[in-house]
Amino acid sequence: MDVIIEAFPDILQAFWLNIRLALYSGVLALVLGTLLAAFRVSPVPLLRLIGTVWVNTIRNTPLTLVITFMLFGLSYQLGVTFSDTISENVFWLAVVGLGVYTAAFVCEVLRAGINTVDVGQSEAARSLGFTFTQNLRLVILPQAFRAVIAPLGSTFIALIKNTTIAVVIGVTTAEGINESSGLMRTLIEFNGDQTILIFAVFALGFVIITLPIGLLTSWAAKRLGGVR
Amino acid sequence: MELRGVQKWYGDLHVLQDIDLSVAQGEVVVVIGPSGSGKSTLCRTINRLEPVDEGTILIDGAPLPQEGKALARHRADVGMVFQSFNLFAHKTILDNVTLGPIKVRKMAKADAEKRAHELLDRVGVGHQAAKYPAQLSGGQQQRVAIARSLAMDPKVMLFDEPTSALDPEMIKEVLDVMVDLAERGMTMIVVTHEMGFARTAANRVVFMADGRIVESADPESFFTNPQSDRARDFLGKILKH
Image 1 (spheres, chains in turn blue, brown):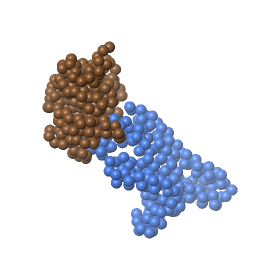
Image 2 (spheres, helix red, strand yellow):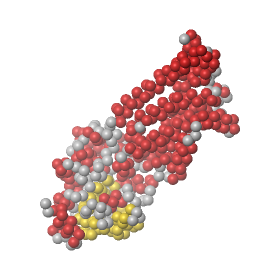
Image 3 (cartoon, each protein chain N blue to C red):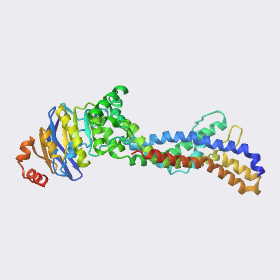
Image 4 (cartoon, rainbow over the protein chains, first blue to last red):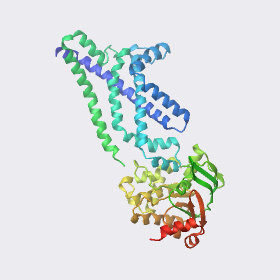
């Protein structure tokens, strides 16, 4: 137990790093995913093609590859940097990678939500003279979002756990503390006799973060999804 | 408003065949006919919810735009009332009526709400403004849908079987609103099975069967002396109970 108590401030910092990764990339994924969903249902064939190619390429690529590409491809090869500080740069590269990856899933969840909205809603909007964008923004998406709150919650939970993949490009805090799975590995390396305890603590940490999201989204889905 | 040589196919099925129809300003045209005769499709082509394969549709002498902003502007001038009401489920009754004027006509919110309250009062659901569509009866929802269309100050109103999804006792309240509208001089195209409405409110009855306009006459002569066998057969089936 001493090992946990001793490392506790670091563990908190490590988890906080995962949460920050999830928050930034979650916002990015939501924005990009909504845009992609709009592309995929758009009347413009080129936009539909972009949406389809994006989703099918990214969704079928392992996240480890996407994240590794962010550092070695995007940053080293193509020269995209977000900051001169290494830890900052790697952090934002991970955010972009996670965001781009999760956006594909958000897009598909939303598209399923759009399909649950009765076609009459869209016809009524069109008959009032709404443009495609107005129709989507004012009528379709607000109803689609309500229909998919629970599955979006699952996507976000998956994202929080996926932030541990950021370890492959060495995401750390400014003080050099790894994100939680990286920190866990270090702790195990130095305390091999307490492996199971360390595992349990980190697993519990993730449950503490993700469980409320599942509960909250289920509750919100019941509250908001029922307006029909 | 005029349709010239309109043709439409669903695959092999020729749903609209050589449709020629013109509707004068202030005229109320009721379209009747058996199911599958193409009357709803005809109604929906006029604001291009269904594109046509051939022929032209003219509104005020100008052809119906194909797509984009011009089509949206055209649709704003053509009111449409659906069989299944299609009120925006996530918006209150008031918001349903103000959304179009605010977003499409760029009307100020206060003005749009004032007008919406007037229209809701006129169709008899003024006290329901803060509720959501699902909290209203079918008849009330359909009257709100009519108010929503009227809020756009349309040049023409299309009604696609507006009472077919309603309980019998609610049909009258919707028809009353429509009769009132007709008496105020609104140009209306009404697809319906309500023969009573056709008799009292229509200037002209158009009878469709198998994708064609078979007969077009004033209601009195159509109901008392139909010219075609198809219309006689149809009226015989629906009027004898």
